[in-house]
Image (tube, rainbow, N blue to C red; front, side):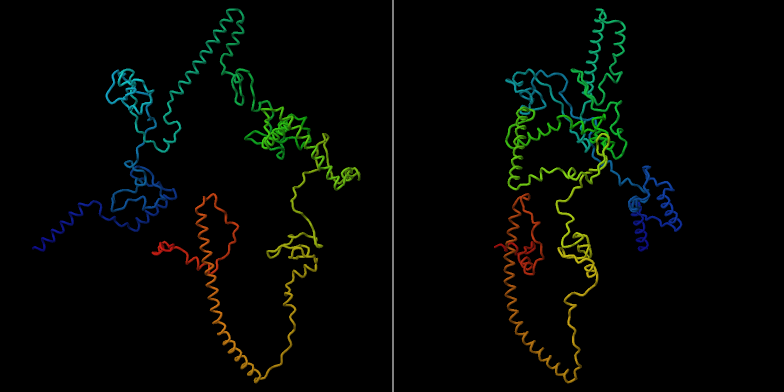
Length: 573
């Protein structure tokens, strides 16, 4: 009976414990058919053929999200549906920021004015919101604490704003729109006063008889200034009300656009951003730039005294760098005279230099000779002109040449060095020679260089004479002689190896000693460089880079300081 009672007690205890914990039942295992249907539904949702799964808040769940992210573990709550609520910001943990309309209060409190000094107030102005040392009002000769008059109103108790990232960087944060409304009202009042003054002026002129009724009606039609675009400031115009001058910086609608001057795509380039066309659009047509209406921005810019003024300005800058106090705008007359005298002296110096060279070396007769075209009465340069004198064909721009000599053939070569390439080497194409500055061998050299010939030393080996066959006795005697020679060589090597080992050890010690000294110098040099400013450190790009020797590696290992070495602190002592 006792055993039965204990069994029933344990059963009731376990049932009570399982009832007290909610959700410990493991999920039921799906059948094979249910599992297949579930997988098919997931595939359809991924393909977009089936509607997406909805969470507890009514929002769609992306079917590509893995199950371990969207589903709730069974040991937490098996009754919950898949959700992404735990992936979104939690409302209880979100930081509360100030609203967009909240800002610091300006001014002072507009309540009843205090007429009596209050205890704890500012001794200078009498306000309760600050002390005397923080008072921004002018220091009074006798403070409000003693006079009891002129007590300033209290400032507002400012709120503590908690601004988010955008709120801290909002340039209009705290802006009061009423400020702009005041400006609009002020302009409206000025406009109304102008209209009233204009109407009064028209009434006075009409009363005095200076203005007819028809003119008054015409003026009343033009009273609305915003009605017609001709009477207001158009975009692209700078209007000065005092001088009544309009400066246009945009194209007038009746003018032809620059890009419509010449529809050839190879004509002058038009920049749509700056609306500039620097070159002449009629350059290839043969028309004279002085005859066309528009010849490019550079034509208008470099006409007249523009070039002269630019040269004068450049001379002023160069003269100022050399110590002359001249300025184009401040003293133009002095600059002009100085520039003229400079040009005269420059021409005289060039002429004297030319005469001295001709006097020393001669050759005046070659300079006075007429050009080759006049001497031979013919030339090979073909030039085609238009009826206006512009060049249509010929006299093209010279190709920019290198400063090095080109197409120079030496040593009877017909091709230059570098015209032939083979197996990573340059050579001459005419003879396939890979040796620079060599003499050309022509077709014979091509035949020799292309054949797989044997080197000169190997090809001239002398033919060996055929040896006579030796008997067995002679062969036996030669083997005995070779054995005796090997024994003698071994004894000699043993004696020499002992002496050479001792010499090698001494050499190694000397090399190691030198490597240790070099390592000490290197470490001191590195410490000196590291103490310098990083902008003053020298560059090491020109140092020779080579593999370290065994002695240098051994010195580095001996001098290296390891942080985990317990005796590292005693190395420098």
